[in-house]
Structures are given as structure tokens and as C-alpha cells.
Image (cartoon, rainbow, N blue to C red; front, side):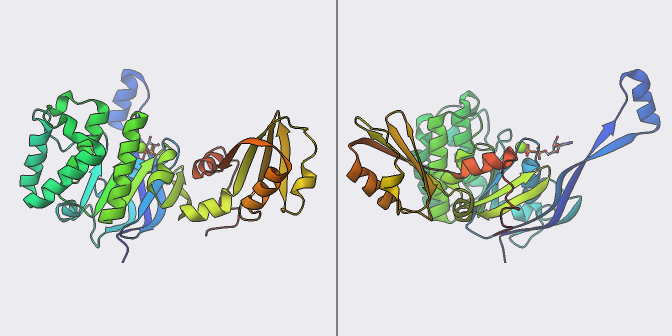
Length: 340
Ligand SMILES: Nc1ncnc2c1ncn2[C@@H]1O[C@H](COP(=O)(O)OP(=O)(O)O)[C@@H](O)[C@H]1O
Ligand SMILES: [Mg+2]
């Protein structure tokens, strides 16, 4: 059985429709009218234990709503969710023992206590064995660097420190699933890196199941092994990063900086390598090709033999490029060969 299973999951928010001004308010009182906003529309999703799944989509796509439905904070309008065999909304108390969630604006920490004491309080509430707790603190110190501000009251922490502290707090009770809603938003690069390293380690060493939403595309490749793209409440794509890479991110670009280039047509020296596109950009020979169809060492060997190369650079299209193309409607993942 999957750890998380959603079937035809729907959530509509009801918003009051009210004409402006006093007369509008009065009319609304007498005959209220509403508009339904569909935030999640027939979502089917199945996440196995130990998977790290990145949930991406533009603002308003329905990411946060989905996470709230999966954690049991919201009740579905229609459809079903099972998390570790339970209904997360109806069985919230039992569910809470097995999951953790960070939402940015909610915190389990006590704002008036020093961080260390606030964490110890959570340890006591959840009756976490001392050895386990120490080990958790050590990991949080090593990778997140929380030891630098354990004695500071939580309210005095910076945003980057708060996010790290929240994550440390969320994991005190050793949950099986960690939901993260936009965990890296607003953080500086160094803190983002720490956070991603921490998530990678939790995933690898503790086998934690991590559903996370983001619109920072760098989060995807660093943390996850599966990508789900949603737009306007609907699922657009669901597949492993490897599938996405091998299907949509196959272009490789090699750049050779050449001493005293003659800028002759490179077609001759690359003949026999397979289908490549080669062109000069100043003193740089740029060769682009499908990395599954053409062998990079063959291309490199020929160029090195024929020219005096002083520098060399390789770039592959990444998952972020693919997602960007989907957002810009330049790539339709479904039309490019259907579901994997
Ligand atoms: N509490 C709410 N009441 C009414 N509409 C909401 C509420 N929360 C979200 N929405 C609407 O639902 C849609 C999806 O929102 P959300 O799940 O927050 O998207 P995302 O996290 O992908 O940005 C948006 O149109 C948003 O305006
Ligand atoms: Mg959101």
C-alpha cells in the first residue's frame, strides 16, 4: 500500500460574492451569493514510502491546498485521501504522530523560549528517548547549523534561522512523512543549500517520505526523485526525474575555447559523430546534440585532435529548463509521447 494515496481529490473554496458599498452588503445579507473556486480538481496521486516528490506549479495552481488536504488540515470537497492507511482529516490525532509539516507561517516553537528549551519541550511532549533526541540535535547542528542559535529566544531569530529551527522542531518526534510547503522561499543561497542538504540526508538515511511544493526550480533536482507538475488545479505531469531528463532534457552543449581559431566549418571534423549542430561564437566552438544519440567522448576527441583547445565547458539541459518550458507553454509533456 502506498504511503499517500489520493483518488479524484477535489477542493473548492466558497467565496462570498458581494457588490461594493453598503447596499451591496445589505443585499448580501438578505440573499447571499457565492462563487466556488476550484483549487484542486480530481487529483490522483500515489506516493510510496521513502519517495521525495516535488510538487511544482505557478502561483495559485493549488499546491498549498493539496498539501493541506494531504496533511488533514482541510477536508476534501470530494474524493478520498489515505495517509498510512488513515483518513488524515477524520483521524487527525493518530495521523499527527506519524507526520510533520512546515508551512512557513505556522510554528510548533514557543516564541518566548530559547530555541533549545523549546525543542526540549517537544521532546517531552512526544516522549522521545534521550539518545534519539541527542542524535537528532547533532544532525540538526551538523547540517543546519542550529547550534549557533540554540540559546536565542525564537522570536529573535532571523527568517533563515526560523526556517531551520522549525524544521528541527517538526522532526523531533521522528515522523514517517514530512510535508513541506515552499520550504526555501525567501531564504538566501547559503541557507537554501543547507536546507537541501538536510532534506537529502533525511531522505537517504532515514527513508523519510517527503512531499514538497516549490516554485524554486533548483529545489527539484537537489532534493527529489519524482516530479509532479500542476497548473490551474489539474495534474499536468507525474514522473520520475530520470524519465523527465531522458525524455525532455536530452540536449547537451559542449563549448571549446580555441587558440587562434580559423573558424572553418566544423562539419568535416565532426563527421561520423552522429547528428550534431556546431557553430562558432567568437573563438568558441559550440557543439550541441542529443546526449542519448551522440557520444560526448567521440565529439571531444575529434575537436581536441583538430584544434588547439585552451578551455572546455559542458552544459546539460536541466529539469528546471523543462519545467520553465512547460510554464511558458512551449512544451506540452502529455503531447510529447503521453504519460511515462
Ligand atoms: N482560504 C481560501 N479561500 C478562498 N480561496 C482560496 C483559499 N486558499 C486558496 N484559495 C484559492 O485557491 C487557489 C489555489 O491556491 P493555493 O493552493 O494556495 O495555490 P498555490 O499554493 O499553488 O499557490 C487560488 O486560486 C487561491 O486564490
Ligand atoms: Mg502555496
